[in-house]
Length: 302
Length: 333
Ligand SMILES: Nc1ncnc2c1ncn2[C@@H]1O[C@H](COP(=O)(O)OP(=O)(O)OP(=O)(O)O)[C@@H](O)[C@H]1O
Ligand code: SF4
Ligand SMILES: [Mg+2]
Image (cartoon, rainbow over the protein chains, first blue to last red):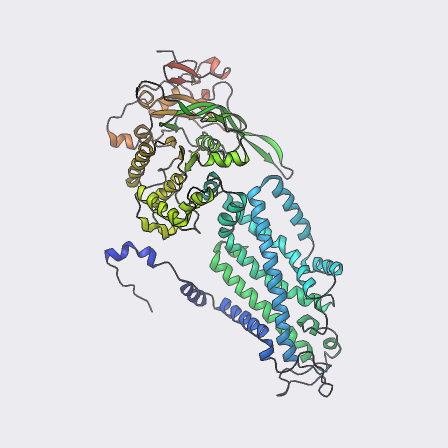
């Protein structure tokens, strides 16, 4: 099927450029049509976000209430996903776990991303020695795998949601800063930055008003990728007992202890949190890839 | 006013050098310098337009960027209205930037794509407190757009919604927003359609008269230079080889390089003149990292004699106001 564009008369054509300024809705529609997988990913993320934020309304049971009359029960109408070794409803724990994953994933990706954004653009803008020193610091931080560094930070600051966020944020900073910096280096050479300098604007104004808005594409791409990494890192830390602590419901935590012990007799205890982790990371990554393709086709092969 | 009295210089450049270090390898070992500008002198009088011409890579843009203080010169003085600005910094430099503005070659990349035209033109007025009142500032934006031949309604548009010529007019309006005295125009029309070039050139000329502006006009197109500039400086490999009144330079070029550029033939037909760009002089332009000894033009010069490769010719005034850097040219006046 082909849509025919009505031929425009001359007066209309003069302002065609204005009429064609795409609205947010038009962009969203185009995204849905062009990126079915990304839309699927986005749907997963939305499901996770909605269940997480409305956990009280959705969860059928209290996620921390033990019920010793219903321990390690298989999925049934009473407990849709079964119960764990303390008789806690798995579905309810998964729903609250989504909230933990969202809080940790989003806040560490956002905080780490924004700090990385400012450091990356600043590094590219000032150049010279400042850039060199920052680059070497980033290199050192990035020499450690994300999870190892997060483990080190947790062992310094201690466990708990807040410290897990800090532990995951720190390794995310240089990752975002490096990608943003390489885009900012190119922006630095574009004459509008020289024009801003020639107008006598302050460094912070040039960085924040003229450079940062023009590296938004790689920044958003990095942030979505970081959410996936952060969710995974939180699950790993919690699984290792160094992240979120019982009785706070967290997916990684749910894979630990009882899940291992009852793996053969009550496999649902391990399967569902594992699935939740997989689907959420998959969703974030599919959405992130689609967004990358939409925002910055040049980055496709990186 | 007595037309014969020499106007006072607004800008005086003395011994300006801009060397870019070239480094190699991981440790950034310095292996040499690109001598983009290698000791040039010129003055621009108040209210005049000085043309700066030369082949690609000869250092025109670098000269302009030094005057704008987008680069810090390696050596030399840049005296603007009596003050040496070559090593100015901080507050004084900020204040200076209101007085010296720039129009760039590429109208597509010189406007921030994320800002509306109105924001782009209003920002300098806001930052420097030239017009603190937001409503008045917008009125001024509309006024500037109108002055530059654009509809005031363009203020709400984004740069990508405009044509190259329109964008260049926005660039001009932005430069005017701070009421500057001096504007560096770096090939302001060479990226535009031929049909639009003349309009923009005429606009620049009108603005100069209306606001008493002084221009340093960098260009490739000799017909534009002849039309717009009172005086012209010819650059070659980081040096100014000849400088004279526009008419003198075009009708009576003395330096072998200028002659080669102009192909020595007067072209009375404006259509032919229009197409008269730089004709490549025989041979390659040497690298500014490793310029020839003596006169930098000697490997390509048809008049070269032995001593040209040993002694660098000093700029001499061969007639009043006619400066040539060639030891083989006779003093005529
Ligand atoms: N930042 C820099 N670092 C190193 N070399 C540079 C830098 N800027 C300019 N150059 C070199 O200096 C020389 C002069 O460059 P410049 O841009 O001033 O030439 P131009 O006369 O403006 O040329 P065009 O007509 O192509 O614009 C060139 O060889 C260029 O490669
Ligand atoms: S000094 Fe010698 S080489 Fe240089 S332009 Fe004159 S004649 Fe040619
Ligand atoms: Mg140039």
